[in-house]
Image (cartoon, rainbow, N blue to C red; front, top):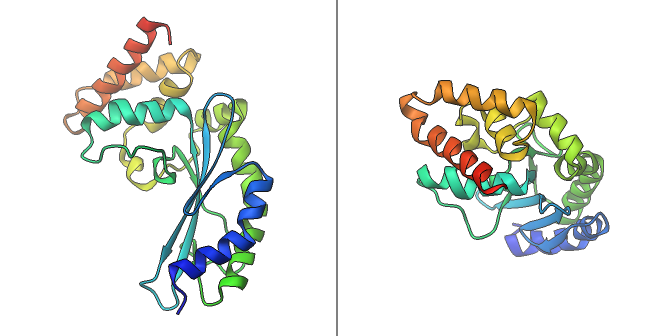
Length: 213
């Protein structure tokens, strides 16, 4: 049976060269590309030996710098799960999973042949990663994506109310729609379950305005 060491050895051989070619740095299980603003596009890879055959998962995540600051500030102040020292794919505001030959309907890759599976993973990333990277690191493309509201964050973040509005305030505080977003959050502020998070977000936003950030 394939083990984790064997899988990541094949990944380094068959996938990592492509990731380096398109501007990513790092090593298993995290690779990252950044822009001049400090925004990150992260590739996270997970391997699970608890299946027969084992399975692997590739997730692409957009973690804009201001989103990371929101995660480390308002979100962490009320969350039971503090942020890790470095950002990971599961902090992503926008999440993507490459599809392709060999992947199951849940986005997992059965690893019965490490060479063949990792070659297929590389093919899939070549098809999906360029567009995702542009949306993650090009500010205009990111703005359009956030304004549309048509994006999927990492699992636990999907429970955050008015995530589009939170993202607009965090990433584009001077945008006209950010003012509308603030008003939406003020109206939602009294909701018991989310009152602390909404209040912390609005207070954080206000403090940034006062400091000129």
